[in-house]
Image (cartoon, rainbow, N blue to C red; front, side, top):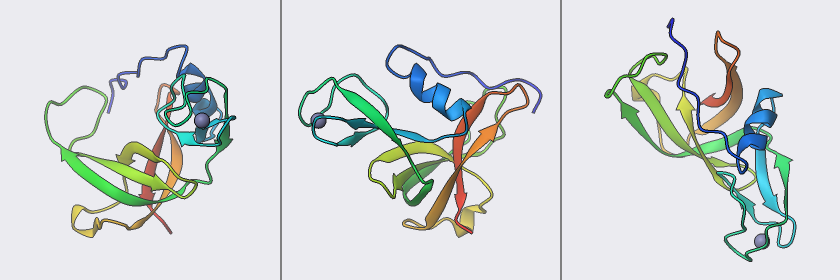
Length: 133
Ligand SMILES: [Zn+2]
């Protein structure tokens, strides 16, 4: 893989999240009015409409809720096929991420997963998951 990955859009609402990932942390946004966790990051709580929030750091444990395998379209900077997983995090909430280090036949719904921060050759960091040890 020589080309670099397409970077996600980073806005006022989600830039902080990518900065935390860059510090090797997996943050989950939390409403400070009602404590509801939410991901992806957004300005308003979907439960109580508060705009006040902080975040917790996820332990990185979860289970596989669902997944899909992407073959096309193929963009530079990725190794295909890509297994994209929806992970139920232990703390609550779900995250969409890439599942690695797992043969396709070994993928099972509800399997325990561990999240980790992957670093690309160009220094870009993003969360990925693999089967729990
Ligand atoms: Zn709330």
